[in-house]
Image (cartoon, rainbow over all chains, first blue to last red; front, side, top):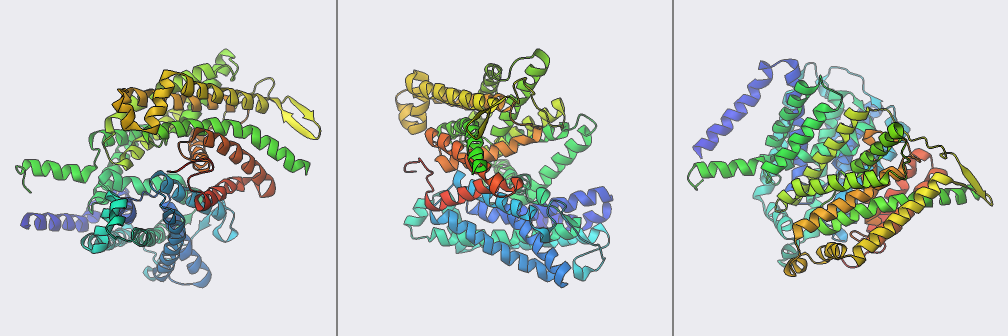
Length: 320
Length: 287
């Protein structure tokens, strides 16, 4: 227990000091890492704990981003408030998709495709909505005012991202400890058995979906005011949904540390292949990244965190 | 009216290749329960191989299906044997991740080899057409449709009339039962993935006279295959075939009725309706 506490304090301290020690390139990488860890944590609630793999979380991300930007530019509402409107809207949309899918007990592949289709429909709609800028996208004017979610310098963004991640992790921690979390795990492990034991699987899957979508939408607002540019083909495409889902899977889905470890690992691997192989032919570094991804699956088929735990247990002589 | 009829004909003919593409995916899923996220990328590789054979050796794309089919068979079998077979016991999402990795590698090796510019195979008969009443038929579309139909029938015969084909179907219907009667299940997996990939590789060749393509086209074909398979009924090969024709026609009509850039939305809406009212797919039985 003391060991774990010390480890936690050490990691927390490192995360607070880190942005002041590194160059702005690494600050960017760290922000991306934290923010994808946050999105992964949000995905984790539905995909990891409840075992309902979503390949359409880019939809909620985009809903969050667009809602807060539209409310801000047209009505002058601060993104700090607008992001909750986005989260609410995303949760509502998730309930529509979830109703479609879960009412018929769509599982596995079917649910994956339903979420993907929903995201694609939204992408096509967004491309044809003048309000959202269509193919050109939306540009956001930069006015350095923290009350408008716009900051000078990277360090502020770093701490906002860190704050987001801490909140999402706390939500996951609370879920993990609650009956709700136990129900989700039961649904993941054996949905029919859970149902037979009287767990209202439909209701809890819907709830998990709503929480997951709402958190993901908050991440969208962060992105909008970090990048200052939104385009449906970059934020609403399948690749983005994949980016959101692979980190928790690599790290170990259904664990609280999985999305965080996965995000750090993949960001490092990505950066490694980018810097080392960027001089090669176009596409080479993505090939290397793909190969690394395959190797991770082959050698850590249960994710980084569970494998790490197993190693530690073995090192401690079978007891933890 | 003629416009719509024309759209229906064009969509139907294109739907034939969609069908074969989806049959390949459905076969792989039916046997291994693995979603081939690299499906479209394997197709794009079929396209580039055809393109290369055509530009360097002058081989007609309709002939090069022999090469692309074989090459993709080997690739698919290698992926199954070297990668998927190793992680059969891992969580479901790991298989997805693995296939996404394979898709990334295939797409970007194509990018390294052929560059990002759209390619096209300009066959001499590429613009040949004939009229049948008020409707124009373009010859490559018709030949492509005929070839896709022929290959689908050959696949049907293979699955129903040969021992290997029966083994694949047995493994798809009841894996434990197949094991009990002494089927070498890992061999069947390798074979099934190979056959599914060969289908989509051949589809790549058949598509080249009709469509320009880039390395990043793969994901679109992958998603299209997913939709068709769900619409037709997962793991049901006839369903995948009917679904392909339906999607071909509805996209083609969508391009006429809405704006062309919105044509895919018709398929997605169709998909949502299927999931709402007939989640097992048009021809799917009980799941």
